[in-house]
Length: 273
Image (cartoon, rainbow, N blue to C red; front, side, top):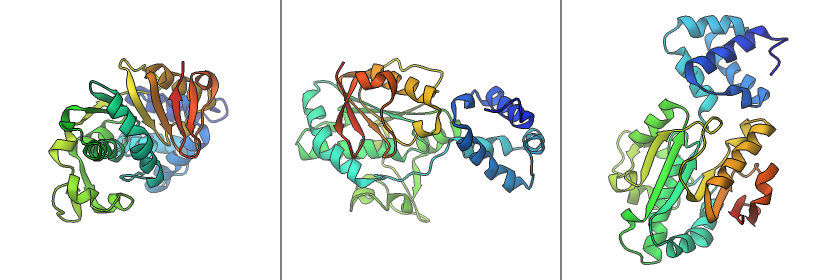
């Protein structure tokens, strides 16, 4: 971050960190500036110093800025081939091998489509392999740093367009009736998902997971932060546990020694050490 040559940007970054706890120093500066620029244009200002004044004076602007920084556009079953592979090659074995509850982590869950996709897919697989009592077999931890994202996940109300990549019948099976173009995820699926705040940069997971899904998140961080996150995921995985990254993400740093490639195209890795 070029704080020495851009004091306005540095001041804005400091305000974001002090008010939200978001460690934006780990973000790629290019991505950070691009997202902040959206709010500058929306507010009709042309400098970071001007925008900082808007943030301090205009109610609700800081929350809109956090949304711009932390929200990723997503859908249910986004990149269907990834979910098809998980449902066919990964989840059946995980669910059959685990005596207790399967522990899954959706890291950087945004507005909740991903963790609910994981819960729905698990229910579909359990039905296919004829394992009853699926409500007790899966726990999905949905974490994000943004409280507004977590509230969206807890509300579990979505525009039907968010299901455009989902398999036929999924929305009808796992959601309530359509009202004003929106649906709510059914309670039996919502109960599988625990929503909580978690800072991927500053915190370390205290639980062990069989499956960690973190897609299209680490690309926004610099190389050092990416390596730190991947090592944290490797540490949090149970022996034989799996990590799923986004299509343009890959293993870096020490995590490469602890995770092996299970499926290259879908960016799925297994813990080996």
